[in-house]
Image 1 (cartoon, helix red, strand yellow):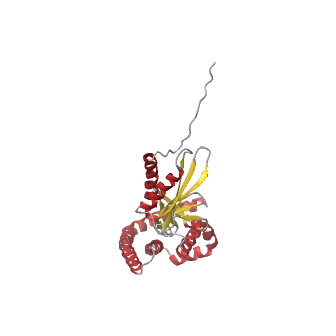
Image 2: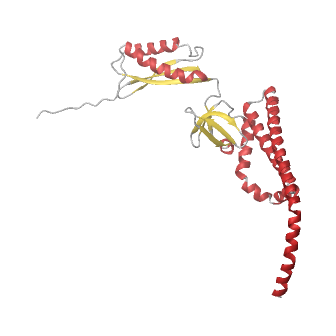
Length: 286
């Protein structure tokens, strides 16, 4: 039996190799043409996707769509067109796309479990765009992990925040849609509240008058909204005065820094002391 197999292998091997060598140039040419066609389809496909995305963006901008909606739809269209392009190229190499889709469909449960997180992020992105708890340009604080920053992009699966020191934080849309967050800049105005302590020996009425005058004369303070200077607490070593006034949200931080500096300068000019922790040492003579 072994001898018969050995004889058949000797007889078939030269024939097989001869046919392989005869068809080799044709196979190479055929494969090369497929590769060339795939490269051309890839180049033209990428250009088409680029142009199509520009058209979509222009249409959405003309319709005055929110920037976050534009970014989300652009991300969705980009991924969808890339998938279609890959399927077209795969078809050129003889891959039966219908069979692949059928296999994926039959394995839908497994695929769904594998992509559970991504589907959750996709659904979260849709909810964010519909409910609009924030939009591009808002400053938000995510309460779960205390991530905060300015929203720069709302993508199909993730939202990007930029911090004050220019770090980029990428948060899953699913988490953002299912957690509490603080939108710091959604309202047009922000109230500033400062607490400053003065010594018990300082003139309380004069200090309150100086602080009231300061916020009345500040150009960025919204004078039409309520302003207060009040005694917040009688602390152990100081009388704590509170200041409340309103700024436009874009003027808030600079206003806070400016008023804090002015308080120190005004108090120094008017001999109103701001107490600070001191340690008194008592020595007994022997």
